[in-house]
Image 1: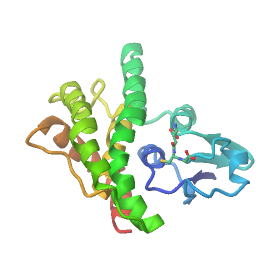
Image 2: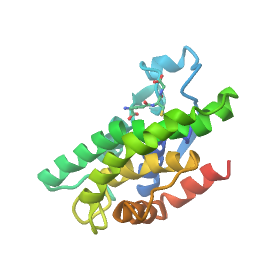
Image 3: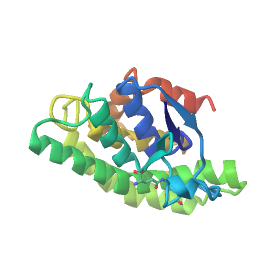
Image 4: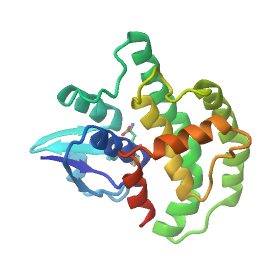
Length: 210
Ligand SMILES: N[C@@H](CCC(=O)N[C@@H](CS)C(=O)NCC(=O)O)C(=O)O
């Protein structure tokens, strides 16, 4: 049995949970938080980061590595395009969203959700406003042009690109923000559509219910 380590609120853990659900793979879930990790956790995840996947004494950290592994052992439904150019583009979107998009959206999440909930501290609203007005708009402008009116970011199928591009928006919602659909209609409709997939919806509902 596979075991996924990492609290579901992490955009990276959520990526893996959605991939597992899409592929209908059963797993145990240990909600390891990404701070104050016990010493043993560094043995399976040397950077101390979540997620990490284990099976017996075999361990694999990092959402991108884990999903690529899952694709090898459970190829269907495929989460990576077979066309080489589409495959390359899907990896690019995953990289962009795992870095630029996650960093910008989780600023809001960290301030409005993590600080008050876990550290009993107030949110830094100045930092949030900077993210909302300076950091996030150019990213949404880029995604707005990339998705256009297409159903998926790459090709004609749901892929790793769509998982990576939509997971951080759940954190945005935890931070009590949503995409301005007047300014970024394509991104708003796309994210809503992907979040309502049968694999994704129960994961979001579980998080929202606490
Ligand atoms: N590239 C990694 C990033 C994982 C990551 O940064 N996870 C955060 C939580 S969202 C973490 O564990 N941070 C704790 C730390 O950096 O010590 C992945 O895709 O899994």
